[in-house]
Image (cartoon, rainbow, N blue to C red; front, side, top):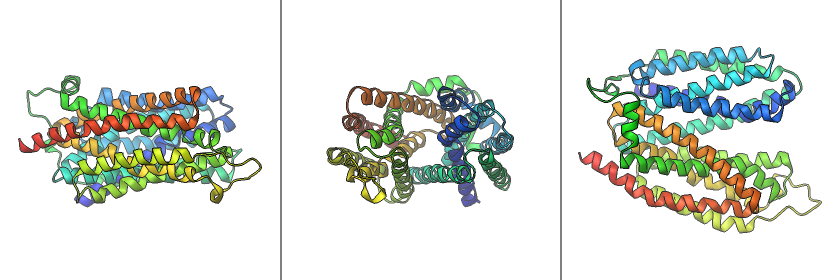
Amino acid sequence: MRMRTIIALALTYALLGILMNSVGAVILQSIRHFGATRVMGSSLEACKDLSVVAASFLLATRVPAFGYRNALIAVLATMAAACLAASFASGFLAMQLLFVVTGLGFGVAKIATYSTIGLLARDPAGHASLTGTIEGVFMVGVLSGAWLFGWFIAGNDQGGDWLRVYWLLAGLCAAGALLWRSVVLDERDAVAEPGGVTGWREMATLALLPATVTALIALFLYVLIEQGVGTWLPSFNREVLQLQPALSVQMSSIFLAALALGRLTSGYVLRRLDWLPVLLACLAAIALIVVATLPLARPVAPGIHAGWFEMPVAAYLFPLLGIFLAPIYPTICSAALSALPPHRHAAMVGLIVIFSALGGTIGSLAVAMLFQHVSGELAFYFVLVPIALIALLLPMIRKRQDRSIAA
């Protein structure tokens, strides 16, 4: 039954990954199919991200009372209905509503998923390993979603046939809800004792703890790096390496694949090795890749129609930092959560989601400002600063985890 629960968690998270990260493809098709402007298209990002923050802030401490299993069933059933409705969309408003629902669903699902991991994990090493595996499957969902939407769009890129992708997604969400119906999950440890601090007061109490502040700052810095690099890597490929627009986007998929590989691998490695030296080694490897590969960034010579096998070496090597970047986020989340009793996990995940959203927004903005004022090659050197800061924070997080285990 434990393995069935883990499979259900992974599949649910992967499905939400497909829907959350389909925003780029949907913006493209909304402009072409619904006649939306670029400004209108960009509103889908806000619909998604603000809804995630709203769900985390308003519902984080209420999910345990409703039940993690029940919450995931409700999210999947709601997403199945929303996807089915989106398949008949006749205007851009339908896409905006879809991403509002998707953001709310993802916020609740992330709280329930991470909190359920706390119920399933047998020790901190197992917690870190399971968290890394679940996040790795999430990244596989992100990658498969890009190809899935691409396949439906390619069938009829000018018409509305691409909306049929939501028939498939609705069916998968419904199947996921049925899978959860067959799962038995013991959630007694998730309920706080009578008289304890609950609701927003619990989130505020957690947010004031020095250990929590340290972990949240580290997560903020991590997401700042990941979103900054991920969002602006196509621009780097286009402006610095002078690749064709389509190839610039395609080459950036190496970064997503590297993240997926790194997280799936970390699930195996962290069962056998202590997480602190592993993460410090990953940070050192990221710094080495940045310092070694960015000087190799050279434009494609004029007149050459570059293909996948004619790329500058930096186009292949720089995105590989995703392999070493990948384990950091789930492992810090795991360390922060495993230092708390299970009934406080939901409130902590709510804080994690809020700070992650802030880090993503500020990271993308910071790199945008750097790209505007310095060359794209120099802009990416900025990741060395948050890398160094995370390296300083990790021993503090580890010390808090050790104290909790000893207690």
